[in-house]
Amino acid sequence: MKQWFVYILECADHTLYTGITTDLERRIEKHNSGRAARYTASRRPVALRYIEESTDRSEASQREYAIKQLSRTEKLQLIQNGQSPLNQLPGSEFKTGGD
Image 1 (tube, rainbow, N blue to C red):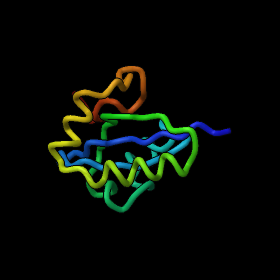
Image 2 (cartoon, rainbow, N blue to C red):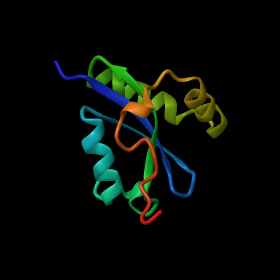
Image 3 (cartoon, helix red, strand yellow):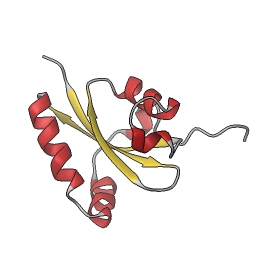
Image 4 (cartoon, rainbow, N blue to C red):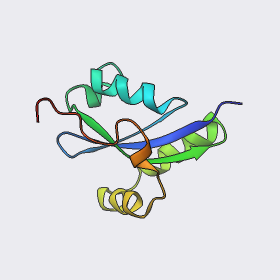
């Protein structure tokens, strides 16, 4: 059985995007290349801010919907209080050129 993840990204314009996937690294790369979601394509780069594991697609989709119903403040609290091991995942920092 595949492991599903619910994730929250912070876009370059500081908006938040919530989605689901079975492969976080691949999905974040797609978001940052502009090939994942219309919303994030014009708001790159994106950075992973929060993840939750789910046992199946149905559970992940339900949790994604619940998170999308939260206010921005509530999402930021979820991110702040989350137990996500973000520093171990690719895409946890904005990818910027140069510096």
